[in-house]
Amino acid sequence: MPTSSISFPFKVTIIPVTMIRQNCMILWDQNIKKGVITDPGGDVQHILSRVEELKIEVEAILLTHGHFDHVGVTMALQTELTKRQNQVVPILGPGKQDIFLLENIQQQMEQFGVFLPDTQNVTPTRFLEDKEQLDFSGLHFQVLHIPGHTPGHMVFFETNARILISGDVLFRGTIGRTDFSYGDGEALIRNIKNKILPLGDDICILPGHGLGSRIGFERQHNPFLVG
Ligand SMILES: [Zn+2]
Image 1 (spheres, protein in one colour):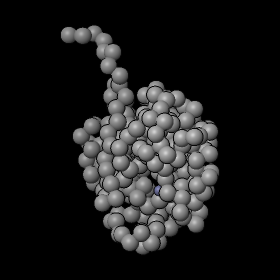
Image 2 (spheres, protein in one colour):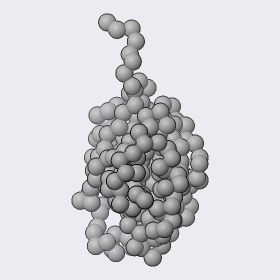
Image 3 (tube, rainbow, N blue to C red):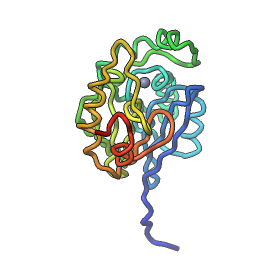
């Protein structure tokens, strides 16, 4: 019987939620069985059942930005987790610039032409700032403010596993849409180039929709970032 384990304790599971297939994620330390959930956009019972299966304690819910497909069931999830864990699970993020989105979840869904159950406006425990460090029991995130898709969009860089939770900022082969009235394509590209690409080519990117990638691949092949 081995007396020690060298296996890396960091784990991540991706849960595509709703018909929009938004990548809600659970990230946790397998040794201590504690972790966080990012962007619970819908399907709250599905997310809760995964947490049960994994037998982990959720230390926080992290939000990248205020779009309904990323945050819709945040309050319902917080209520359920708080009941089960017998202590309040904090909601951290996004930037305060996204308040106008968090307070208009129903209107966002109407504009998009969908209705998702269990959704409601979101009141974070606190908003996040650029360059903050979030230290949990087994996970350590650097917060980066990357506006352009929404004004308060944050991405989360887990510094041990070297994984970037990129929300709707950076996808495999493309970037987030900026055709909203509050969008800013120039700011989005500038912030990706100045703040995300320098993290290192080896960094694994886990976006809010679709497949993952690496920063090195995007630096060479993403048409919005080359040249
Ligand atoms: Zn979005």
